[in-house]
Amino acid sequence: MSDRFAWLDELPTKPGPPDLKMGLRSLAESDWLLVDELTAHELVMRAELYEADPATVMCTPAGEEASAELLELVEQFTGTTGRTDIHPLAAASLLTPEDLHLVLDGTLVAGSLFFPNEWALADKIGKSLIDVHEPTEGYAEHLGAKVDSFFARLQVGNLVWRRNWFLHDIDDYVQPVAREHRAIESVDDIEPLFVRSERETLRRLPRTGAVVFTIKTQIAPIAEVRARRPVATALADFLDEASPLALRGKDAAGREQAVIKYLRGG
Image (cartoon, rainbow, N blue to C red; front, side, top):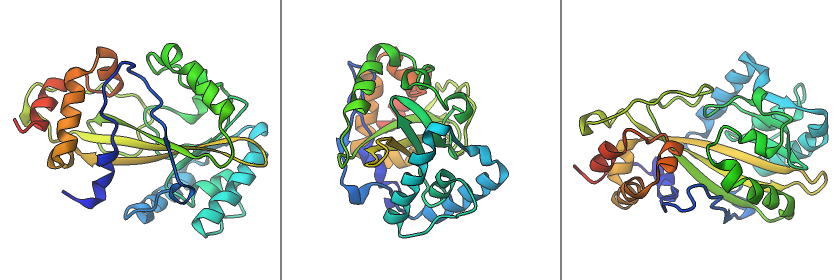
């Protein structure tokens, strides 16, 4: 068990209903952007990805001013200065391992997506939050109005965070295309699995009023979950009680029984 994966202790493991929930928690400003032992490696990855494809960062005209404001905030937080020869949002996104998105009046006006989890920035930029989340099964019915209301009410200085998690067959940071995850029937086939989690934060910029939505991607072999017995038990209980919708949302459908047995030490 490695402290490198201590974030596994933060995984939300309470089953529904509701099957989809915001699960927001208050966040101290000093904990806004994470720095860990993988930060240097991830920053190198991001620089390489940006040089290969500057379209990892996109901005609409409505997001220009907020992008400049966000760069100032990230520079202040990290104590480093961003590049001046690229877009302000790109400069900010190369100072942190976290993908950065800007929402103004309920619309995604700018974003950086270096570590996609089965979606593409070009498909979402300029769209409303409901449309951004359109592929998420059950989002419009269960979460859409709550999320819109929260974004509208979020106050400057009130930072919040949440986590999600998924069971993936690969540990690639860059997964822009949805995969058909393999069914698993035997415990012997479990250990190639990985838990991919996104730590997401929300805060409002004081000048432009845009909401910053950050995504910190973290990936762990499922063996690391099994080594943390309280987490393993909680995840097994979640999968045992989860609805079909919740299982599909975790990319766990068709493999949950084998995973449950593995996590419980079977």
